[in-house]
Image (cartoon, rainbow, N blue to C red; front, side, top):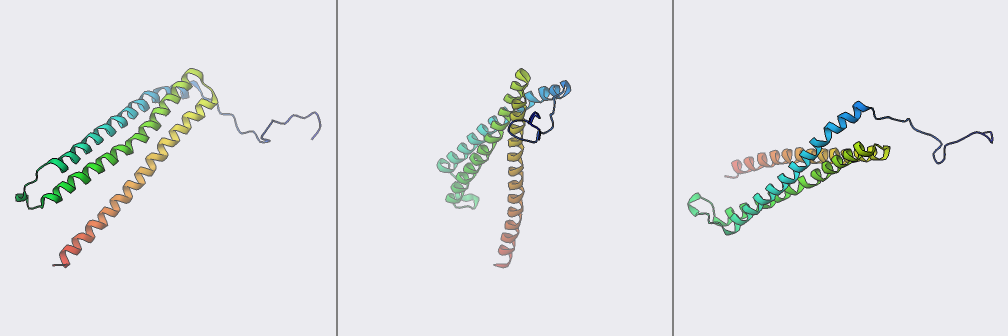
Length: 163
């Protein structure tokens, strides 16, 4: 290169510049309240699920299950405790989704106020984190359902042919 030619500092390759149009900003502004609303729903769902889990644990530990229902009382108590723990676990799974959505809404607020590329990138990063988490949970959910189906099938066949 000639001595008087200019190269961008740092990277030799400069990517395309993407501008956020007023319509694009309007769509993001309309998305922000929904992201915040759903994040609050995630937190409320987590709290309600945890409270239900604690209630199930309390019922399992302190409740009375008569033997007339055909179950041993310890089985009913263990079922209550295990169900309660599962409710608490499910509630805990809502918390990261709520955090990601809340951060996304906050980044959209900053974007509306300041409008820099870095803030837009942060908003997209928060959105990516939410969708990655939601996708992983969806995949785990499908795997759990498939496992439960085959476990139930196996147990039904085992019960049928073990008599």
